[in-house]
Structures are given as C-alpha cells and as structure tokens.
Image 1 (cartoon, protein in one colour):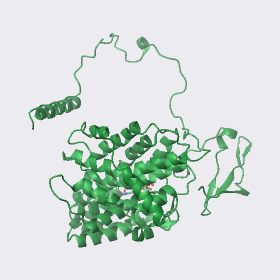
Image 2 (cartoon, helix red, strand yellow; image 1 turned 90 degrees about the vertical axis):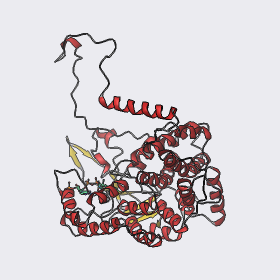
Image 3 (cartoon, protein in one colour; image 1 turned 120 degrees about the vertical axis):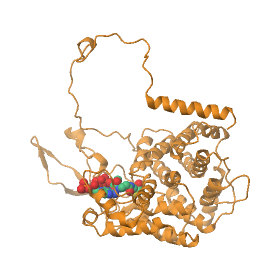
Image 4 (cartoon, protein in one colour; image 1 turned 135 degrees about the vertical axis):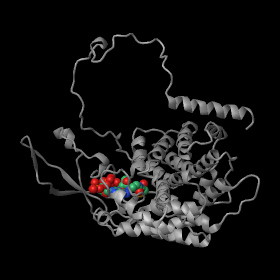
Length: 473
Ligand code: CMC
C-alpha cells in the first residue's frame, strides 16, 4: 500500500535563473517529512539537481520500512524492530515485509508451508558450486549462484501479476539460506547438506552450514534463536545501497533473481555489509586495550584512509537500535555458550573511547549493527567470510519485498540518473598516425607479449590444483 501523499499549496520561494521563475511543489510523506518534488524540474527548465551519494534525494516512495535517524528508531511496516525481535520470528518478519501484515495463525502456517516447498534448489544449479575453487570467497559464490537462479525461473516472467511476484518472494525466502549454506560448504570442501522440513529458516541455515552427513548434529535452540534475531535485524533497512541496487536493476524489468544478485554484489563492500567482517579484522589488529588510542587517532586522521569499522551511518545520527539489540544479544549468547571473548571487552572499550571523543561526538558517529554482529557470529562458530553471506540471507527478505513493491507500481520508470559531465567537449577524430606519441610501428597480428605475472601466477595455481585433483589429492 503506497503512503498517502499530499500536495501542499505553499511553495518554495521562487528561484531566479536566467530570469525564469522555478516553482516547485513540496510533498509530505506519512510522517510529515517534506520533500521537494523536482520531477518537473528538468523537463521544464533543463536544470538538474546534483547529489552524488543521494544524501538529499528520495529515490522512491515506499511503505515498507521507516528509519527515524535522529531518534534511532527502525520500524518494519510500522512495528518497532525491538518488538519484532523480542516477540516475533522470521516467519512473522518475512510475511510482514513481503505481504504487508503480521500473519494470522492460518496465514503463518500457509506461508511457512509455501517457503518450505521452495527450499530445495534444482540439482543442476548445484553443479555450479563445483566450478569454484576451494578458496573462493562465499560472497563470490553467492553472487554467482543467486544470479544463476534467474536461468531456472525465467518461464513465468509476467511480473504484472501479483501472484507471480509473490511466488518470486517465496522462492527467494526459501532458497537464499540453502544457497548461502552451499556457498559455505563449497568454500570448505564439505559435502552439501539438504534442508529439512521440520526446521525453521534459522535452524535450517545453522543445520545446513554445520551438519555433516557422517554424524548427528544437535541444534542449540539459544544459538538458533540468536541467528534468527540477527536475520530479523538485517531484514530490511529502507533505501540502502544494496536495496537501491535491487530497485535500479528491477526498474529495467530484469529477472528478480538477477536483481537480488545485484543486491548481493552491492552488499559485499566494507562500507556496507562487508563491515562486519572488517570489524573483526580491525579488533584483532588492535589486539589489546592499550592500542585503542592509536587506532582512534588513525580513524580521525584526514591523511589516513582508515575508518573505525562498525561506526557511523548515513541515516542514524543518534544510535542504531540494531546495534543496541545486537550488543545485548552478544552478552546473552556468550553467557549461554560459556565463552569469554576478549574481543567483546575490546569492542566495548573501543565504543567507550570513541563515544567520548570530540571527533565522533561532533559527527554523530555511533556503533552500527555491524559493530557487535561479528562477535555474535564468532560465538556461533560462523567463520568470518560467512558474515556478509548471513547478512545477505536476512536482507534478501527486504530486497525481494522492495522489488515486489516496485514491480507492482503502475507508474514506475526506469532508473536513469543524469550526470554532471566533466570530460572533453566534442572534438574531431584523430587518425592513429597523427596521435601524440605514436611510434609508427604496425600492430602485431597476435599479441606476443607474455601474460602479466599475476595472470601467470593464477594460471599456475589453477594448473597445480587440476594436477593435484587428477592424482586424487
Ligand atoms: N570512522 C571515522 N570517521 C568516520 C567514520 C568512521 N567509521 N564514518 C564517517 N566518518 C567521518 C567522515 O570521515 C566524515 O568526516 P568529515 O566530515 O570530517 O569529512 C564524516 O564522518 C561523515 O562521513 P561520511 O563518509 O560523509 O558519511 P556517509 O554517510 O557517507 O557514510 C558510512 C556512512 C557507514 C559508509 C561510514 O560511516 C563508514 O564508512 N563507516 C564504516 C563502515 C561501516 O561500519 N559500514 C556499515 C554501515 S551499517 C550496515 C549497513 O547498513 O550496511
């Protein structure tokens, strides 16, 4: 359901450009926030807005998730994340995000049945996993196999039909944990483990990651619940980089799984979902409390690209509610598993030091969700390179919800930003003999130069793996 928009009668003070008056309306969203409607700006004036990073630009109207960055509030369809994390589960959360309402018992049963029916992936898709080297990053595997899903589900491409969009949602929720777990198994050279119908989404993810066909695997209910809450905390976060990527890809009416693969790619970077991995590396690099001041000084330095990973957020300028929940859960989980992790003490001390530092106070930089999630993952036994993969499983629920919302809009247009061109202006083509620095030699018919050292090294590695495999190693 789209939010109610209201066109205000009050207008911006007119801006004069070349003697013309630009008269633009304000819009208000459901919370009363104001938006300057610039849709008619270019067609009527040939003037564009310039906003790299989209700091001041709303790219769409959405009724799914709301963040109040100043108050540190996060709502899924109006429900506070704290309440969902305490009283709800992943089935509630996915139903809410995808279908817009908290499910009744009957709707919940039906939803869970549908998701269960979509957990398996086609056996031919499993062959894709065999093509990766043992040292492939699970995110590299995930981005590929999620994209490959589009080759398996291209038959029912009428996404003007709400039922077809919903089916894409069920497939996404059902299959993402399976693909994520297979990515893990591939990266660890272990046999894949099929999902079980008697387990919920988080339990299944845990089971498919850690179980082996050779021995029974007991699920720890506290650990599974912790993973479930982590998935819920990551499920959606309005128009972040990866979600916007999914929407932009979807705006060309591309296959939804290709769009989700684009979202996985965008999530991977350390400024986004890859931050959880980077936080742990940072904490390990700091090592001891006495090295915190040195690290904070580096983060503040304008000549050092180092940033305090897990700190700061484009929207939250108070506190990230997910970080608070994650920190509490971290303590509970470590207590339950009777783990003493020195990195948690280090993280808490680092948080204390940064939060009392003028630089971080002035810029409103607080711990974000990723600051403590790595320590939770570590306690759960999940290896570092899987952190962002788990994030992707949670966020895929939001991605597909946002895609469903966008694909259901009648008025959606292809996303096509403009640019501020800074290159050469039109000039005549220069024949090769007249180009500056031309050596006068004809080109080799075949490039006989050796490959780069990097390429040769990689080729050598691939060959040695192949030879080792052919000897049964
Ligand atoms: N450490 C040190 N300084 C920082 C940090 C940080 N983590 N984050 C921002 N700043 C400074 C930045 O240098 C700038 O300073 P100045 O005004 O003097 O130039 C100021 O704070 C504003 O930063 P910005 O880069 O304009 O902020 P942004 O909104 O573009 O970036 C961010 C947001 C999350 C990418 C950034 O804070 C960051 O790189 N944080 C570390 C990575 C991280 O934890 N990412 C996870 C984000 S939450 C999970 C998710 O949703 O993906």
